[in-house]
Length: 148
Image 1 (cartoon, rainbow, N blue to C red):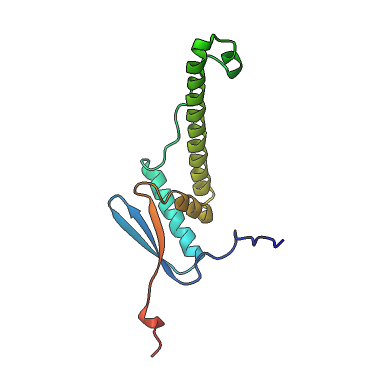
Image 2: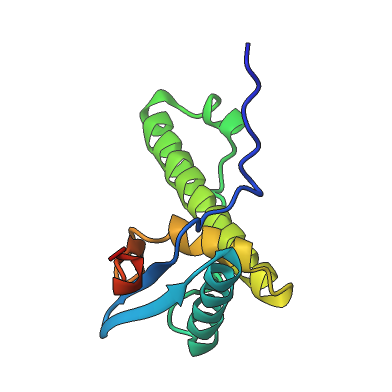
């Protein structure tokens, strides 16, 4: 069995590219000749978005659990069990969403605080499918690349 290659330190940029952020009011372009430029641009964009205050939110209210615990549901009359179980499921879903959003927010805060461009890039790539959060690396050609 072959061991998987550790990709954490493998270069992302092997030839200069354009980093394109597709935002609500247009696109932003960054020339990224190497990973250092990529990480610097990612940290810049993530930090700006965070400071604007309208991109990323810390979840405010942790969901309140229902009055009945899972163990207590079994002791309820059969006519009430289905409704109680539904409330538990809804609570568990809301709690999972809350914890996920809190984890993302904390990752963003940590990346900015530590000025971790690699983490900023991972966060932005993970969120690239979100509305107004698209980002892509695009190759381009240069006339200097042509050999005459």
